[in-house]
Image (cartoon, rainbow, N blue to C red; front, side, top):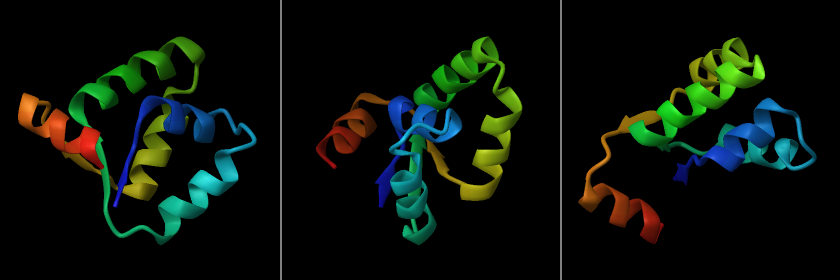
Length: 80
């Protein structure tokens, strides 16, 4: 299971040096999670950086499970 965070998403979208390794991990992982809060943040960042379409394309490829942000979910994700 992979839990996507803003820094990982940005690395992939901006094609930073770590992007290849992250993309490989996503390709072999069965479960990819992203919190609704992180997703909202990513759409804001992507819009401001002019990479909104790239974000949509990435999400369409990896099809993450979007989980609601509750205190319990935040604690579970933080423990992974």
